[in-house]
Image 1 (cartoon, rainbow, N blue to C red):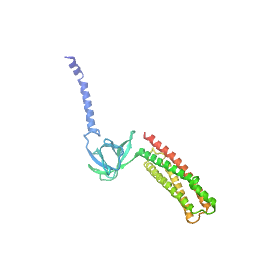
Image 2: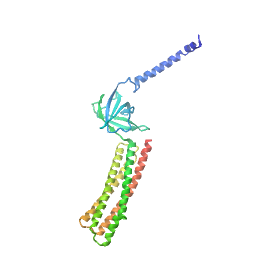
Image 3: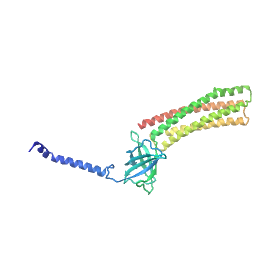
Image 4: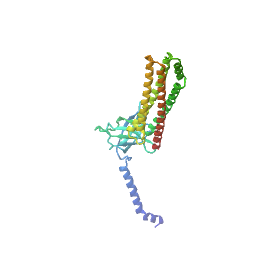
Length: 305
């Protein structure tokens, strides 16, 4: 017997065992693995306003368990239509929430299905509406955008305060005060210009703060552990909004005194002093809030990576 045949004969049993093990592994994968074509599946379409970085191949989770994948993403003028393919044993009530979330260390997007309680189930070919969750990275970007607006508004506020305290607006009031007990008619237009400019800045600040507050409240409501300081930041924003409202009321009260002919120099200069003091306090609070948002945004970015 040749050496080759002798070697084959002596190793036939181990070879058969290896073949059986390999066949068993392949059969087990085919019968039990979720990606196997052996399992029946169905597809449905979810309509989103935005999808971020979602792409075909991303995972679909149903009640926290991987049940399928995204097979198609179609962009139209009205919306983005995402086709999902899931295992047939995934029973999804029609009133479920179809969220796009960020998952994993690399921040990949995936569809997370939060089951509802409707007896009516999603079937093959159905189209439903979904919810786009920006995730902590999106919240962080929005907070930094709000921060840029706050810095710009704060600079405008400081410039306005300086114009009252040391600039042409303030000097005009001081000159009139030295002329006598009653202010000339031009003072009314001066204070009115104060009011209009200040209200414009305050309204911009109010809008930006409300936007930042909404972002933080939304993150806080979702119980996101990455945003540990969200509640504190919201409280800080509320305090600053209250101060803005008080300053706006002070401006309105000063203008009202002029309209009622209560326009003595003492009243106007006193009002000027109070407004400057309030603007100083608001400016200091905005500085503190900007630092807090920077810390919060940095914390978010660290947690993501």
